[in-house]
Image (cartoon, rainbow, N blue to C red; front, side, top):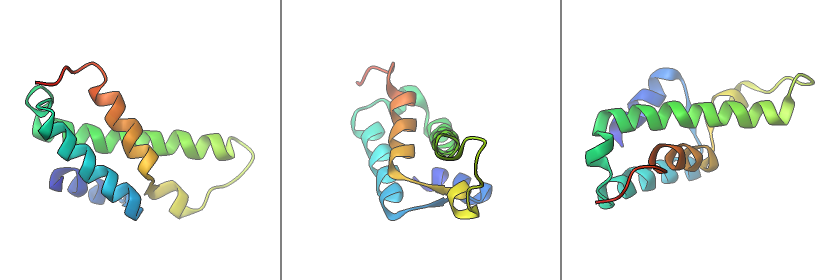
Length: 97
């Protein structure tokens, strides 16, 4: 959890309260399911943060496309769905222990 938060902070990415809870739940689920052993602690945290940011970018693009200008907050704030999409992408093919 701390690695993911540190990575997001270093990128300048903020989290809504729901996104912070989803981040914690995602990390907890990876540990309790045993999949963290296959994913790797640091690698999982970094990839979760990267993929959540990518999901956010796609969400913002879907909202604005080429016809609008999102705010700075919209460009830097993760929502719970962004984190959940990232978690799903990372763990979809990893069998639990």
